Image 1 (cartoon, rainbow, N blue to C red):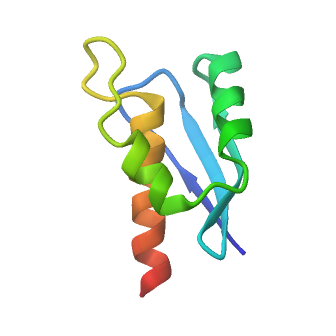
Image 2: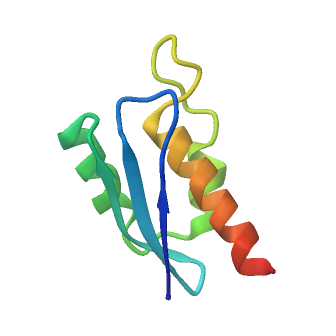
Length: 86
């Protein structure tokens, strides 16, 4: 199991973390942001395939920001998958 912590940019959330176990996401959590929605994302993604999550959430936008917490999570998971493959 590998644990990852990232600082999102361009969104209300100030931090996000998750674990990767055999390509699956676990313990997805955000610090700050829309508490109820971000807790729901964490619950929905428990045990989800990491690459499928990236494919689904990448490019999801929040208003005028040009990104979203979900998009920032996708970017973080993509970076983590790159690290795992090295």
